[in-house]
Length: 133
Image 1 (spheres, one colour):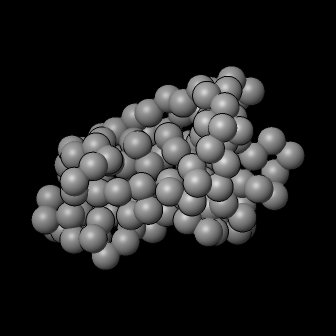
Image 2 (cartoon, one colour):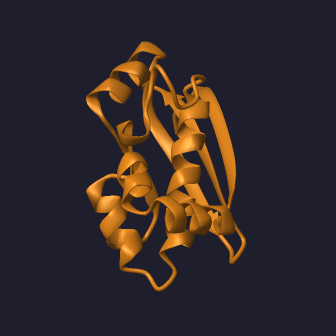
């Protein structure tokens, strides 16, 4: 097995109640600014969508932290799309061309993510790993 080089790690914790409040207050204006169509369809199909939105929000924050930039000038909310493996349910991310270019600039080849949520919190961790040697 080849050792992999970690270039960055990010973690984020989101209170699901705060996500519920934001969605209640701002509705589609909020969700469309932060989440892509596939993400919104997935979350809205759930009994308590805000919990799933909170998890995806946490992933996006964790990825931006692993890149060392946070959300802002270099990478935006819609540059990170949270995907779900149809067979296993495991989360992953698809990066926009802009985010992919930033990952390449940092020497990164892959972003690994983990996501979990409870009734009150969602947490995510992201690791930016270097290209295989």
